[in-house]
View 1 (cartoon, rainbow, N blue to C red):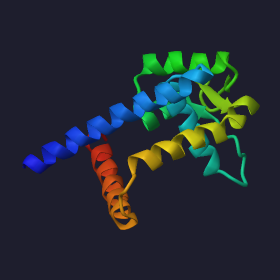
View 2: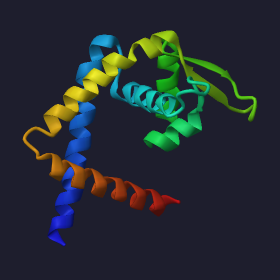
View 3: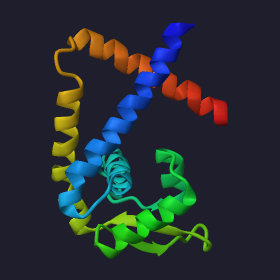
View 4: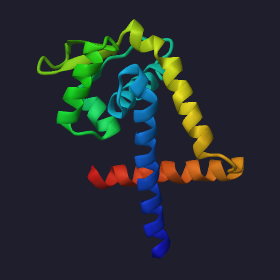
Length: 153
């Protein structure tokens, strides 16, 4: 049972260090970790829709569900991203009580910067870890994500 305590503790340390890293790297662009997380999620969604309406909109609730932030934090985060010109807000034709957020040209132009920040993080985090071990770790972590997602559903 002791080994499972270490898994949780290590995951907590990784998450805290990742947020601190993002905060440090993004501060020069006037962004914080939450704003970076939203942009990453929107880039990920856009990349999975290549060949379609490339810049798919996301509701605030979809973003909250994806990155697991509370509604208050997300409201402030989206307001800042909108004010700084990274996203625009539009009415949601499917639900007039919500809005769709889209990446702007500025938001899309920032993608290579964000990807470089993430690449440097991954390089530092996986330093001196064998590719086979990384593959197993990735597989196990993906399964853990599925398992914990099912706890709340």
